[in-house]
Image 1: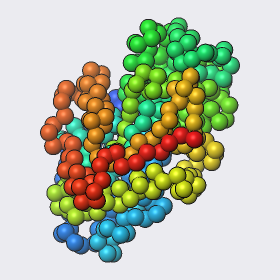
Image 2: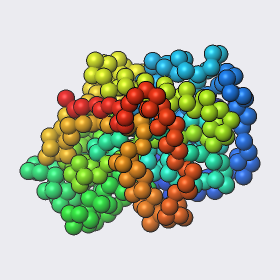
Image 3: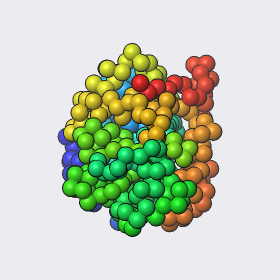
Image 4: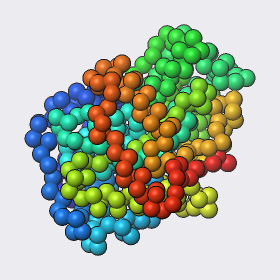
Length: 378
C-alpha cells in the first residue's frame, strides 16, 4: 500500500468522531495547501488506467458501488489492463476530501457533500456526473427512544418531541429534513444537538436522547437492535434525498473514455440492484464490505417495508442514473440550504458543476429513460 493511501486511511479513522458536520469539513479543507489544485496525469484515451473510487461505508443511496465492486462490471468497459481500488470513508465529507486531495478520482456520496465539493475550486475541480440513487426514507429517517409512548401516526410522534432533546449530524441531509419537518408541524425541541451516528447511538442506548434524524442503514440497525423506534421519514413531508457520482475535472478532460466506461458499468450496477432476484447476492456484497451491521438490518435498509404511520414507502430506492426533475429539485434545494447555513457562498451552482451529458448519451444509446429501475419494499 502506498504511503499516501495509508495516510488517508489513518486520517479517516482519526475523523470518525471529529467530523460530525459539513461545517467542520469546510474548516478542514481551508487548511489544505493550494498545491492540491494541481492536475493529475491520467494518460491518453484507450490506455489502461488505475482508478481509486471513494465512497462512504454506510449510506444506502450509494450502494450501487457495492454492486459495482462485487460484480466487477467495470472490467467489461474500461481499457484492458486497468485496475480499480476502493477507499471507504465514514461519511460524505471524508469522501469529498479524498477527491479534492487527489487520493481518489471518482466518488459516491450524498447530495449536500457532493454540492459542497463542487464549490471548492481553489483546491480542485470536481463535477457531479451521475446519480447513484434517490429515496424518501434513505437519508430522511426520524427515530424516537425505545420507551416513547405509542403513537397513532407520524404527526403525533413528531409533536411528542416538542420541548425534548433531539440530535442529528448538522449540515447533513438529515439536518435539512428535520428542520423542514419541525417547521411544518410547529415543533421546537428544548435541545437540538449536533451529533454523529456513534454519539446518537450511545444517546439512545443510555436514554439521554428523545429523538434523532439519521440515514440508512444506521436507522434500520438501531431499530433492529431495539435501541430506537422509527416514527417518520421524508415521505411524511414529501421530502427526497439523493446520492451522486462525482469525478475530478482533470479525469473528465483527459479521459472521457474512462468517464463513459465507468458510467456504463454504473448503469449495469443499478440494473442489477433493481432486479429482485439479485437481492440475496446484493446484501452479501454489502455485508462483505460493511462491519458492525447484521444481515437483517442491511436487508431492511434496502428492502424493508415499514408502515405508512412510520413514514414507510412502497419504493425504498429509485435508481435514476440520470438527472430527472426530482433529482434536479434535490440539488436546487440543497444549494439553498447550504447557502442559507453559510456552508457555501453562492445561491447558485456554477453551470459546469453538474454534467448530465454523459448519462444522457448512455441512456439514449441503450434505449433507456431515467429512472432506469426501482427497489420496491417487501
